[in-house]
Image (cartoon, rainbow, N blue to C red; front, side, top):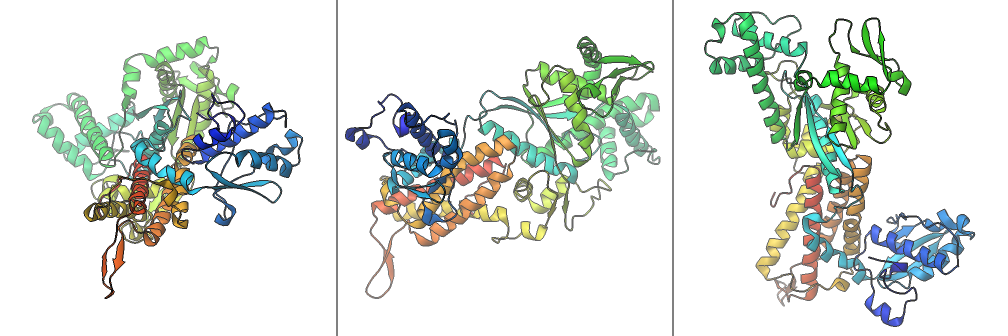
Amino acid sequence: MWGRCGKPAHRPAQVTDGDRQNIRLSRVTPEDLSTALAACLQDAVDSGEISVEVPTTIKVERPKNREHGDWATNVAMQLGKKAGLAPRDLAALLAEKLAQVPGVDRVDIAGPGFLNITLDAAAAGELARTVVEGGAAYGRNTALAGSVVNMEFVSANPTGPLHIGHTRWAALGDAISRLLRASGAEVTAEYYINDAGNQMNVFAQSVYNRLHGLPVPEGGYPGEYIQDLATQVRTEHPDITTLTEEAALPVIREAAYRHQMQDIRDTLETFGVHFDVWFSEKELHESGAIGHAVQRLREQGHIDDREGAVWLRTTDFGDDKDRVLIRANGEPTYFAADAAYYLSKKDRGFIEKIYLLGADHHGYVGRLKAIAACAGDDPARNIEVLIGQLISVNGAKLSKRAGNIIELKDLIDWLGADALRYSLARYPADSPITIDPEILTSKTNDNPVFYVQYAHARSRGAARTAEAAGVDRSVFDAALLTHATESDLLARLGEFPSIVAQAAEFREPHRVARHLEVIAGAYHSWYAACRIVPVAEDRTGDVQPGEITDLNRTRLWLNEATAQVLANGLDLLGVSAPERM
């Protein structure tokens, strides 16, 4: 743990020459430099040179022009006036202190007060060892430690197969869940099964009619999958067609529902999406949870009885109109189930409830937040509703089995789960997407998932070649990583933890995807410029194995570090990291 201006917290403020020999930034990431800068500011405050509140986080980023250094910050411009100094004067004060931190080679002041920081090669290169030793944990952080999150997504009706409309929410919901966990949150991924209400009766009737060769009922389900379900029901219950309609429908409803839910589960597993909880709406009704929820909301003082119905005054909390919970005929509304479901999440200890909904659900945002407020929660803290836009796939064909939809299964078979998940993750949820299958199925750098996966596969191939040539990781000398492409690659790897934390905070997996592409580009440039396995030309010009040096061994560490970060990032998106391509 670093205390004053890069010194261990237990050390005195004054840095002696002996201290300088023993203290150095053991690795360099934006977070490390942010901590060092905060310590330098605190050092200036403690010594009476300035008076200012030291921020907990100081933004450090890569300069656009690498000639300006490895990292840059505008903290002096942000705090100069508050500290009672001109920004350049505060920058000069910080530059002098930061330059004393071993591992920092040079600190320059630019423009109105930018600090451009150049590291020595050893400090920058040490990151390679940190990544390799960190393994799968590198990039994980504790920014959201203490958060207990219920993440609900997909939640498609169990009356048919998953289709293109569910694809994006499956990919994004799972990636966001992974990012939240990587940032220290306790996350439960939950699927809400809409297995109550008239839609399930219509579903059962559709299967019944197919069993008896009757037309699709009004408002029923016409897809060929209904025939598949009818066949499965008949196999389980050979005498089903001998029963009266009244006796057959409950049996059909239960069996067809079970088979359809298994199809949904299997499709999601194929897509790499796992749910911790499958929550049944039907159980809400059968357990009396809805009536209990209405009573609790009444005790909270937000219930009105009007026109024979029971109303929740959601307008008290910004909804556009009050909502009926119980109709005049005594039947609960869908909204009553929504309220009971929210209270169930609250009772199960979830501090934050995240809902990922489709573009046609904008109207749900206000009412869900109103439920939270009526339940005594803070709508700004305890509930978050993410709205995603639609996607389309050029050339996608409607499913022959499902009728008028494009099935997720067909998309997976056509494009592959990796390509589909990556392409959906690399755009913000609120931007419409049109997927080009020609790009996603191509093995070229125009295909983003291929570009990133190939970088990982290339690194594994390089490792195999190094092993065959006798290059190992028996030596690591960070000071040897001095090539410009090495500095760039190390910096990109160092940014990864902060990218993960930002992606989790803003629920934006595309930040990780885009950064992986940056890392892949930096790796490809390094691979072309720097050799892991040495070669030498003899007098005839033939290439022969060269002498293995510590530089080659150290570069193997950097190769392994890159492979690890690429694998970690792809895993956060639910995408595989192939060993060969």
